[in-house]
Structures are given as C-alpha cells and as structure tokens.
Amino acid sequence: MTSPTLPPQLARAEPLLWHNPQRLPAAAALASLPYGHADIDAAIARWQRFAPLLAHCFPDSVAADGRIDSPLLWQDGELLVKADHALPVTACIKARGGVYEVLCQAEALAQAAGLLEGGNSYAVLAGDAARALFARHTILVGSTGNLGYSVGVMARALGLQVEVHMSSDAKAWKKDRLRALGARVVEHAGDYATALASARTLAAADPASYFIDDESSLLLFFGYAAAARDLKAQLDATGQLPTPARPLRVYLPCGVGGAPGGVAFGLKCLYGDAVQIVFVEPVASPCFLLRLASGDDRLSVYDIGLDNRTLADGLAVPRASATVAGIVQHLVDAVVTVSDDSLLSEVRHQWQQYGLRLEPSAAAGFVAHRLVASQWAQDVIPVVWTTGGNGLPDEVFLPLLAS
Ligand SMILES: *Cc1c(COP(=O)(O)O)cnc(C)c1O
Image (cartoon, rainbow, N blue to C red; front, side, top):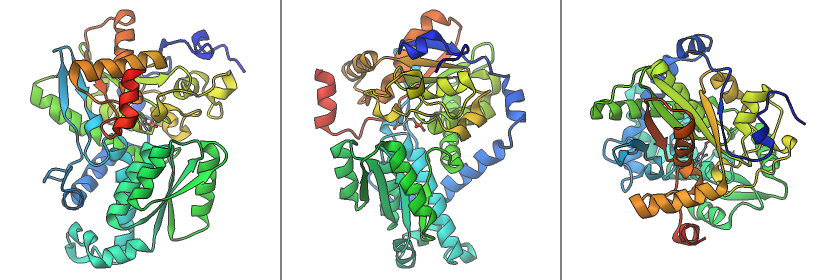
C-alpha cells in the first residue's frame, strides 16, 4: 500500500527528517482540544498527593520529597539532556506514565473503600487495610518490556496483583525481572497485538481487574504530560528563556506515542511556539510518522512493507495510538527516523564520552539532533530526552558496547 503523501524514504527504511504539514501554531492547536492546563494541573496535584507514599515505598531511589524526576544535564555546553534514563524507581520514562496510572487506580480503589475519608494522609495506603484491599485486585498490562516493569514495580509495592501479558519472543531477562517482583507473566504465542487483545478481554470480564491500555490510555498520557512542568522548573533555574525566535527543540523517542505525546502536549501548553517538538522513530518502525502523513489510524508499518524489527525494543511498535495521534497531530513539528547502526554507535559514544548508560531507544534523540542540525538550521536550544537504560543488566548492556 502506498500513498502520495508518504515520503519515499519511509518504505525504503532510510533515515529522514519529515516536517509535519499539519502542524499549527500552538494556540490554535490547543484551542481545538478538549484538554488543557487543568488536566496537567490535576496530574501534578495527584503526583503531589502520592509523594509521601512514593518516598515511603522506594526509600532507596526516590528522594524524601517523593518526586519522580530526573536531572537536566548540559553536554559540551551545546545541548541539554533530560536524563530520564536515570529516573527513580524504574530508570525509564515509563515511570512517569505506568506508575502514574497505577496510582490513579489505587486512589480510586481506596476512595471507594472509604480509606481516604476525613483527610487521611496517603500514608494509609501503605497500611494493612489498604494492602488487604489491593491484594484482591489485579492490574493487567500488555507489554514487551518497560511499561510492564513500571506497572509491575508500582503495583507490587502497593500489594496489588499484576499480570503482564507478553509475546513469547519477549526477552527472557525481562520476564525474569517481572517474576522476581511477584508479577504473573502470561506468554502468548502470537505477537504483541495478540497479547494486548487477550489482556483487554480478560480484564473486561472481571470486575476485580483493571487493564492499563498502552494504545488508548489518557491517564498514561497525562502522567507523562506532568513532566513538562519538571523540565520548565529546571530550565528556569538555569536561566534559559526560550522564545519563538529561539525555541527549545525537544527530541522525543516515540513508540506507540503516549510518552512523547504527553510530554509534547505538556510542553506546548507551557511554552506555546517557544518549543518545537521532534519525535524520533527507528527506520523499521516509523508508526507515528506513518499515521501523521497518511491520516489513517488503521495503517501499520507492515502495510508499507517494513518489518518492525529494531534493536530499539522500546520503540518497536507497528501502529501508533489513535488516541494520542488525534490529540497531538497539530502539535508535532517534525519526525525523524534513525537507523539501528546509528543508535548502536550512539549508545557506545554516550557511554564512553559522558558515562551515560542508555538503551538503544534512549539514544535516538542524539542521532536525530545530529541529522537535523545540518538540514534544519535555526537558532534553537536543543533538548535530548534520554528515555531509559540505567536499569539494563550488565549482560545486556555490555554486549551493546562490544558489537
Ligand atoms: C516506551 C518507551 C518509549 C516511547 O514511549 P511510547 O509511549 O511507547 O511512545 C521511549 N523510550 C523508551 C526507553 C521506552 O521504553
């Protein structure tokens, strides 16, 4: 299947910079949406309510203020790195979305059971009554990796049951890591889409089950969106004042679209046209570019002859989230696709030069920045979002350096 609106490099799996012709000025794009600042404020308020509980549950990784945020680093005085590969709890950006949606569900269960009445502090959610309640409920999620882990860590910390549905070809170490948490891992013979569909069906049939849907969840989306406020506070502290004449240019690795979409939405709400959003995808899995360029929610990368096989397993998604695409289609400035080879050499470079431990997905922003610098010259403040990697075991990370 081909379409006249698709750039020819796309089906040839060649790296490219694609400017989104549907992009609108931020004010116009945001005005047409049923979501806005209030949704981000609500997410931030929920993170704050849970802060003491998070500090209690994860004393080794979450600071006493209970915030799940990462450092903002300068690299060579040239670009900024939003270091979510070092995020507390799960060392990947899913800690902003997956953890958040588990908190939403825990809050809803506790409220329904009357545990949060009378201004009770959220510390009661770590108590015996809450744990007994949570033990009777199950969170289901379909995941090839990082989302399942983030959901699993948070849910198990609260005493919720967790069932992670995976395709049987998902990496063994990821399954082991989940089982070690006390999560049930259900393997499916088919691909990821099959795993997702069965988790969704199971959860719909059981009132004590709750399904976290990577393809359509708005809670994930707004959990991610709250990150925009974290970045802005850090930029303010460094004295950086982006303007439309000298905007931030933020590179966001994109899989199904929830994480980059949520962050993009949050940043456009805060900065308007003083931020440019660049999604980055592997050449074999450019599902979001395909969705934006075709306007067709049903198309997958298989339909244009691509195989969705990439080292960047966090981004190996054949079809974009229709929900997210509908929200951000006028907010994304550009999409860049990158090759696996360039990701691998970037993983090595970032480790050797700067000591950053990245998974291939998380190196995508640097590669895109290099590619774009020559083709899209403008005075900008580049920000590369590194989305995961500190949690990789040595036996997974070291071979990446050697290959
Ligand atoms: C999931 C993930 C992404 C992208 O998030 P989506 O919501 O799937 O678009 C990027 N990087 C890493 C490391 C991830 O695990």
